[in-house]
Amino acid sequence: MTPKIQLIKYPPINKDNFPDIIINQITHFEAFDTFDYNLICLNNPNIFKYQYDIFEKADDFYSIKARINKPYSSEIVVILPQNKYSKQRGIKDELNMIYKFLKLYFNSPPFELIFEKNKTKMDNAELSADFYLDINHNSCEIITKNTNDNATTIKYKNIIYTTLNLENNRDIIHFIKEIEPKDIIDIPNWFDEIEMFDDEEKKLFIEQRKQEIQLLEEEINTAENKLEENNYYKSILYKQGKPLVKIVFKMLEEMLDYDLSEFKDVYKEDFLIKFNDITFIGEIKGVNSNVKKGHLGQLDDHVTDREDYLDENNIKEIIKPLLIINTFIKKNPYEREEVDKTTIKKAEEKYETLIITTIPFLKLYEKFKNNEITTEEIKNRFKDEIGLFKP
Image 1 (cartoon, rainbow, N blue to C red):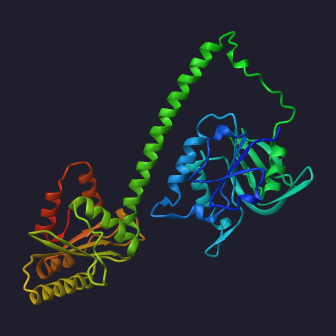
Image 2 (image 1 turned 60 degrees about the vertical axis):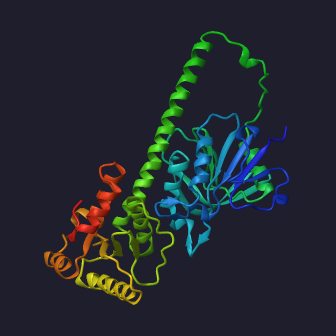
Image 3 (image 1 turned 90 degrees about the horizontal axis):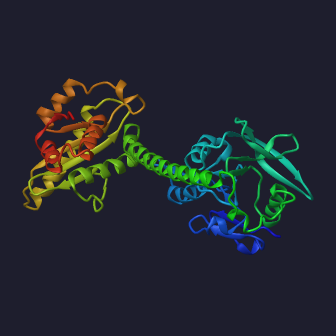
């Protein structure tokens, strides 16, 4: 009997080239139990794009992860990437990101990818690969080896992993024939209905443990998602430029209950937040130095520009400058130098500015998320305090 095969792939491809296989995108795949083999192809560098502490395809692969952790009568095959290039860097140069991806979505398979172009011979076929598998766990079952006797396909727990380049209908069919169990005897439909010995007790035990495992996996998944979110915000400790501004904007929007989506950066101030009683003008900086007088002077220039605009249009506003700054970005935050006292004094006496470094800013956000401080209290602190902000 010809096995039913589903190939889950990104991006979409010409299905006419795969007459014996059902092709589905990673966003729209069919139920795994409908097929004998479910192949998940990772052979596209864009899958591993990682920005702002998250993989761009995170939502799609969380759906995959939820499926592979369930028991299925069908086989799950992960087709590992070939050494394709993206922005002049090959997959072989991004292996740590590949391992991070596999750990997050495919239960940390126990192997390393070793770059070496190689061939694996099968009946009437020879398949190529850019990597082979260096296994570091004795519970792996080796299914195929290359001509140098290195593993190219293994099974670990409920998943088959292969480095073979399965890019067309013919190669996939050859591969499935190679890994398909031989001399299979069909089990009759009525067999599972026959209960003897302690079958009932063991089935109940297994079902209960599966439910417990599922609950624990859901809790772990929730915790991992929360850690990923935490890391997103903590990343302001090493970022600068637009990535830093984007995250700080999100935090300010939450804490001050203010929408910054309409703000346009015209190379003046980094943000302008207007309330009835106060207008905050701000600079957001990531630097590899301490706070400098020039940073305060630049912010003061923005204040002067705003005051000129208000005078020209006969508008009255109370302006408060805020400098949100990530200092010494290459150092551990707890090893960074304190803001110089003369700079703090200059901020207080000359510029009436509030300097907020990233650790106090994160601690303030943490207090806000824990309901230990309100939006109004944060606004008043920003409005009333000058010098160096203390959480």
